[in-house]
Amino acid sequence: MWPLPCPNRNRGPSSGFTLIELLVVIAIIALLAGLLLPVLGRAKGAAKKSVCVSNLHQAGLTWFLYLHDNTDRFPDRRDLKSSLPGGYKPWNSWPLSDPRIGWAAVVLDRFAGDLRFFECPSIRGGPLASVVQVNQSGPPQSAQVVSYWMWRFDRIDEPIPLDNFWGRSLSEAVDQLRLAGNPIVGKPEGPAAVEWIVDPYFPSTIVSVAEELRGWSAHLGGRNRLQLDGHVEHLRDPRMR
Image (tube, rainbow, N blue to C red; front, side, top):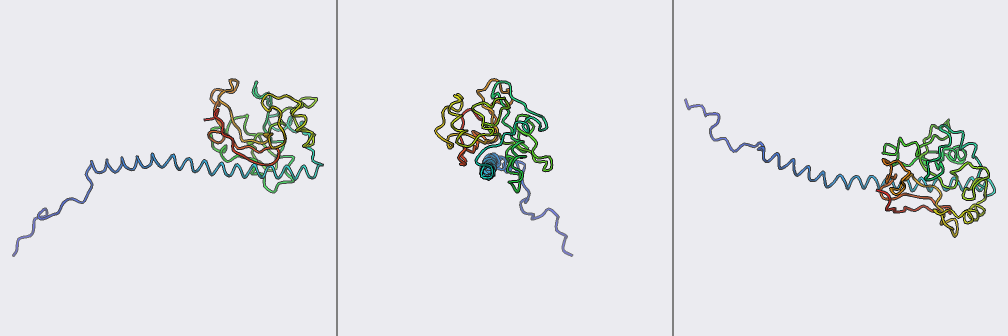
């Protein structure tokens, strides 16, 4: 009989990876991940920013539907602004106002088929999601969270401050805003120059803002904003991270 072959005789090189080869592969994967993750993060942020722009367009259209039905005059719902859950919460010294707009979601409820455009997608699950100056409840029956801000409807003083638009027509609002001499707003030439609805932002230069919030915004490096004439733009702001 022929002798049985030795199990190790004539065996070729091992087909497994050596430890060094495995370490090289892991290092390459880690390097690729390090290169790709920031790109994916930026793409995700850009997608959310686009949704936010769409939300602000929808908010503008809904407001103009309201104005058309109300002789181009804004509502005076300071009562509603004070009575929503959490009430009126002006900030310490910047701004001396409460720009949250849960009240607006209540007013516009019958003009909007879907209230989800009141929530910025970058707020949900982000670092600003639990900040009291950001989120407010909308209509009770919708359980909708409202995360956008709206300037010029941020005070409940009596009489109405010149730089607030409660109960005023569009033309009156701009004229009164010019007279107000608000140092932040200046003297806008028309509605296109008036910042109206924005996603939340906390400039790094404002010392009265809590230190952990300074420089944070819904969208890195700036904010989306709806101007009073209805156009939306992204504003780069060096005070943002």
